[in-house]
Image 1 (cartoon, rainbow, N blue to C red):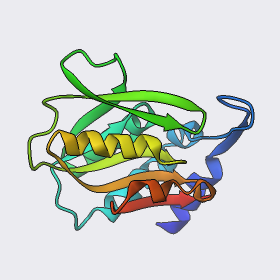
Image 2: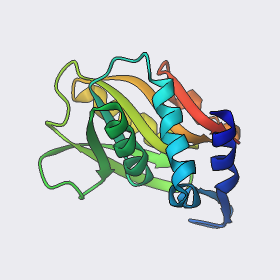
Image 3: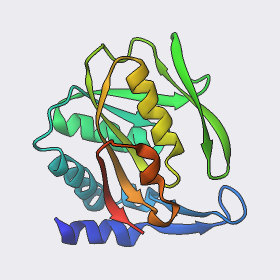
Image 4: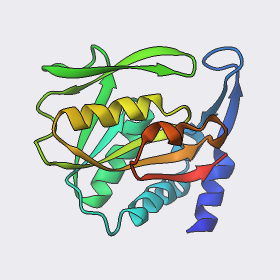
Length: 175
C-alpha cells in the first residue's frame, strides 16, 4: 500500500499564489486523473476504516465530494454532501467558519443525519482545520456522531489538527 500512496503523493502539484497571493495550493487533480493513484487513495482510506462501525460518509465541497463519494461506495455506505451556502435545495443548517484566506459558510440538509448516526467526515486537505471543524459541528448539531475525520493530505505546519479537538483524525499524506 505504501508504494502506491507514494505514487499518488508524487502526482500532487503545487500551484503558487492560488487562490490568493502567498498561498501554495496542493492540487490533487492529477491524482484523480490517474486511475491507479486514485484507487490507491480510496483503498488507503478504506483500509484505515476496516474496523470502524459507521452509517454514512460525509464529504465537504468540492474535492471532499469526490473522495467521500468514492469511499462511501467502496464501503457500501450512504453519502452526505456538506456544501457552500446556498447550494442545497432543501431546508438546511449552517455554520460560519474562517479559512486561511477568508471566511465562508457551509450547509447540510436538516434531515441528512438521524440522531445517533455515526459519520466519517472526508475532505481532501487539512490546512487550518476551520472547514472540517465547522462540518463536524454541523454533524453534531444534527444529532450525528463524528467517528473519524479523514484527509488525503495534511499540511502539518498549519496545525489544523489542533482545531479538531478529540476527534480521531487520519491523513494519508503529510507535508
